[in-house]
Length: 256
Ligand code: ZN
Ligand code: FE
Image (cartoon, rainbow, N blue to C red; front, side, top):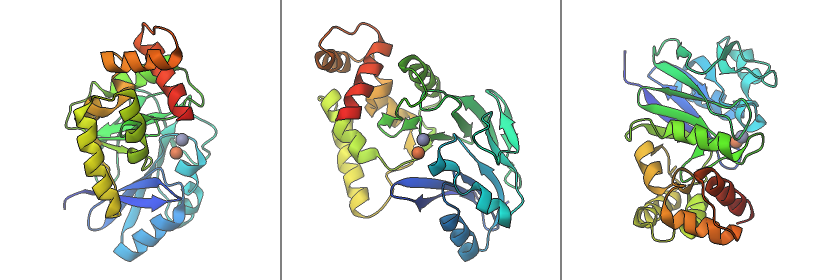
């Protein structure tokens, strides 16, 4: 089989539809819009073999139905009735093998952004949806700081060289906040320069890696003294658990 590439297709203002492809076939993660996918498949003469969904938000599933009109393919997603098109509802620890590619993904249930959010992990790739972003995490629409803390901690167990494909291009604005929360972090300054250059060229800043997130993402660094200090200052009280720190910096970022 020929080599597999992972291509970002842009949707809406800042979504990425991550597309696994070789020279003949493709699978898409979180097709919020069918149009860019159909255009790409036609232009590249690729046949769609699967759809993967991380969570039920419209900007991640909105293209499912239209794509299914053109291709009869399995749709892998969480146990959540709000995504009607899912054909294979997945639980934590289950494995799927993407048709044609044979790439195996393990499913992680990672609640926090939504109640039923999942991630797909395999082949040194992590599709993290809106739970883990480069230098950030998703808003807690249906979850608690404890859930987000547990979900992120779990992802941080993965090897440092795992590539992280997340749902949005939020890196630069996330870095701006992270520099306020973690002001002396040199890795953050370096990443900011690199990411700014990429954005000037119109390039994605993604994928990130687990190693990069461990070095730069304040939401997975809630035990770092500098972050505990700035979060406590912001909250006006001494925060003595990492979960409390995560909750405080999530609130802080919501208003940043
Ligand atoms: Zn979302
Ligand atoms: Fe989203």
